[in-house]
Figure 1 (cartoon, one colour):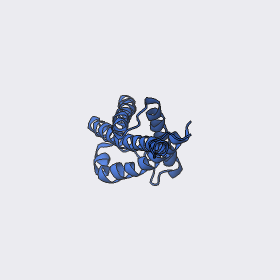
Figure 2: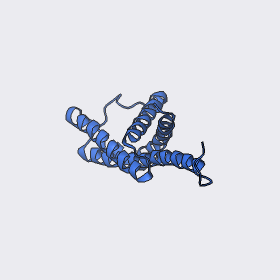
Figure 3: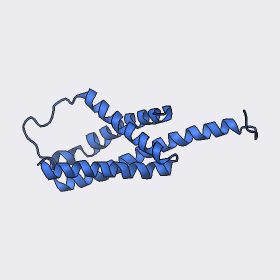
Figure 4: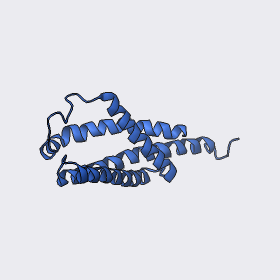
Length: 150
């Protein structure tokens, strides 16, 4: 894996954690609590932070890898690609949950799918910016005085 992809994945992973905390832990917490079925022992009082960190870094690396393969090296391309990837991933996961478990209501799944899609778009736009920034820096260096440097 390329170093720009690893750094892009790290950026997306850290921001995924922060965006997730803000969106799902603060903004939508009440809505999620009201629309999730609760069973004794289902939720941990204190989540395993190591697992949460690994999960967010995995999402970030997956997104950075897909954007690198797709050539999404602008903010706009990154947003579109990130939106689509997170939309499809979240829809697939939530539809499996709905099919097999009594864990959430359909309207909660819809809100989660849309929220994650926009979060994926934001993360994708940041990774796209990272990829474009690196390209501009190289181009600026190579053509700074109007001549190609060797």
